[in-house]
Length: 169
Image (cartoon, rainbow, N blue to C red; front, top):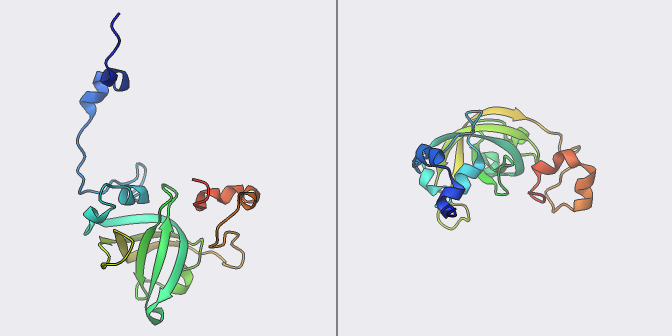
């Protein structure tokens, strides 16, 4: 009996026939919703800059947030748990109340356009928010996850919040 070739042992012929080449200029939506996983934006070959100009809906938790420009806009780092990286989000005060949205741990669903940031920034793509679909506010005084590095001992006490951290992938 002849051993199977490496390709045959990996994918049966039926699966090979069903594979199609994906369009790299279109961002893939989540399997069960209209949201786009942050992983499908940031883990592309080009870091997501090839998706500039695309309208997307992302959802997740605010990892860090800060108001800038005298309170006229804010920068957010949003994570949805699909990858350890965060998506940078820029939101104007005309879109929503920034005080409610910049707190660490706030749950958000945001619609906007992906843009290439100005030169000299570490991000390859950022989201300019056009509409805030949902905000799940959080009381910063009671939220148990600080912005600082978390120890594994601390995370053992708040097991249900591990997915909101980047300490344990």
